[in-house]
Length: 63
Image (cartoon, rainbow, N blue to C red):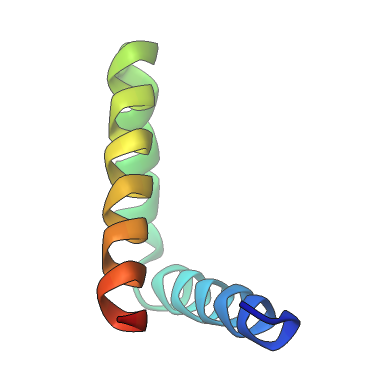
């Protein structure tokens, strides 16, 4: 993995997040409200599952 790969990854995250906020700001608010009502352990588990899914997808994409 090179510096270019890391920069590309960060750019893609910013692009996707920016599009979500631009296209569905009220949905973002509802999701944040739902997250605020979840117990901390549930949010932690959701974060770990999301990170593991990202690693798996990256592993598949990179071969």
